[in-house]
Image (cartoon, rainbow, N blue to C red; front, top):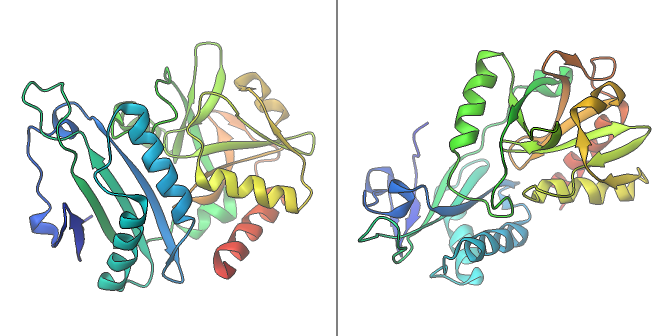
Length: 278
């Protein structure tokens, strides 16, 4: 994908060709930095304040001081949406570790905000559901949305080979955490169950919990294990770009009857209504 349009890079608006960063930046040599991602609906950024809060929290957790205020970044995001004038926009906010003289000590961070046209996943993913695989991975600094996606890149390549759309992180005891770029939910005994510990709390995840509460769907936050898959009536993953994506197969295990279930459909509809009316 080419990042056509106008992008923000350290106090300047630049084209794709000028999105250049030093090879000595810690984001390059160590994968040290943080980011956040959101999209627009009706060309308005959805839950921007929540995403900014998470970006600044991620930076704090890994020891980076963001050289912009939340208000300044908010204004940059709105200006970028206006400048690019896409039908809908994906927005990626990045704070790097800065140029380092010894490849380990952070320098002055760069602030990069990329604007690209939003593209939707195929409709068939939502009509028939998708397959995901499991991938063993020890979670570290899970509350920070770090630039280090080593495990995710490896897991997603494996998922692709197995004709799956995502990979769920698990530990050696079979506990399910989250997907590489998504949070995970299962419907068990009529309740919406999602993991509470050891995950990055997604903004979309929180929206789904809010919608479920309004629809009076019981929500339970607890540990989930692979051995429980046989009890899943439905399952889905959530993310800003995936929204509510039904999961009908985990590894070689069918979820429920292998079709998109009624509670998932209600939440998909509720999410769509919210994004189109907020």
